[in-house]
Each structure stands twice: as C-alpha cells, then as structure tokens.
Length: 102
Image (cartoon, rainbow, N blue to C red; front, side, top):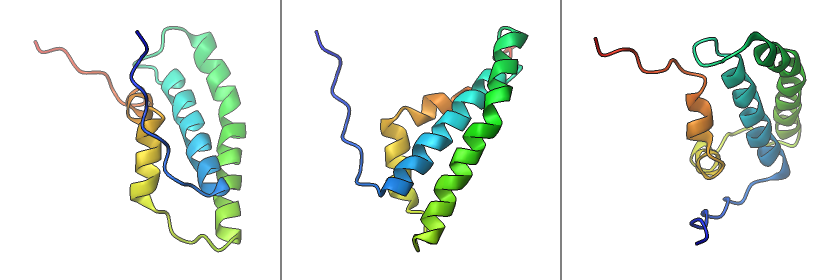
C-alpha cells in the first residue's frame, strides 16, 4: 500500500522556494539544539555549528527577494508550502514538550 499522495506545492518564485527551504533547515537545526528535546550534547553541538551557515542562506534568500523587488511575503502561499513540507511537525521540535499532568 502506497502512502497518501501529498498535495502539490504552491507556485513559488525561486527566491521564495529558497526562503522556505532555508527556513526549514534552520528550524530543523534549532529542533536538534533544543535542550528539552535533544538526547546528547554532540548532536546539539553539530547542529549549533551548522546553524550560522543555514541562517546566512536564509538571509541571502531574503536579500535576493528584496533585490528583485519582491517586497511582500505572501504568507498564505508560504504557509501552504510549509505545511506540504511538514513544517508544523518540524517547527514543533523547537517548542517545549508537553509538561507532566501531575
């Protein structure tokens, strides 16, 4: 049985696609660094070391958008792209896990 087919990504400019990809890479790294969710210092350290390069890529993508005259973020379209790329789950790793009910 095949997994359900994902909805198609919305139409994005190249720079918007780069913003979405870079943003999710930063979120993934922050999730690995999160001390409330991580399991070991080495993986958190490696993620922290990789973070500046991913943040620079995000900055560069936003700079490209701005330089090309793309002055607005089309939040509904970008949010749809993030959802298709599992952004909600990935961003959830950055937050605190649920507390004890006691």
